Amino acid sequence: MQDVHRHYTMGDSVVRALDGISFEVERGAYWAIMGPSGSGKSTLLNLLGCLDRPTTGAYLLGGEDVSRLTDDRLSEVRSTKLGFVFQSFQLIQQLSILENVEVPLFYQGVAPHESRERARKALERVNLGDRVHHRPNELSGGQQQRAAVARALVNQPIVLLADEPTGNLDSKTAREILDLFDELHAQGSTILLVTHDPGVASRAEWVLRVMDGKLDRVEPGGRHRAAAGTGA
Image 1 (cartoon, rainbow, N blue to C red):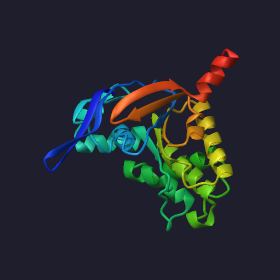
Image 2 (cartoon, rainbow, N blue to C red):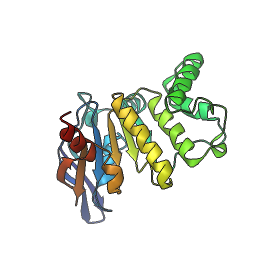
Image 3 (cartoon, rainbow, N blue to C red):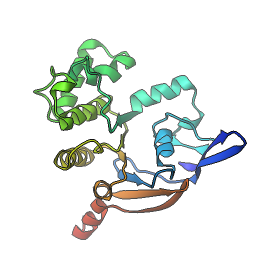
């Protein structure tokens, strides 16, 4: 992100939700984004996820300035380059877990046989290979979030975006989901995770703090400090 601003007009007032944000995330990195309510972190996540556009500034995703794309091309970028994990799972109750994971591939026009195989592999990757025909209400909260992670991974995104992914889970299940993110990161996934919980943020390599629409600071996360401590 290069000098990104996002301003909204409300009556006669201009709300500066983001006011000159610049940072760069390397492929394969694990970042947490933190900030108090109203700091701009949700606006930042919407921009990172190509759900909104900057008022000014540039957002380069894999070298492509997505802030200048047409709506159709932006939709294509969302479906092929990004994976989303939400606090509330966002699973379709009428579909099996396997069918839920296939949904992004359906919109890409992937052939049914290939779609089914890729969805199975994604579920196996999150240890749900034996639950493919269950519906969401037949799974625990942690299993539902694992299914949501599988859905986010099925299109092989270059960035995985997670918005408070442990917010609706008990502490034990939350640790299991964070362990899963650790595994995905170790396998090369680029992860950007929004959280208000310092314990969750400590799993990341870097913590980006937003305050009043500005970048307050970037500091090493627990994973970075641990690696530095071992000389890794």
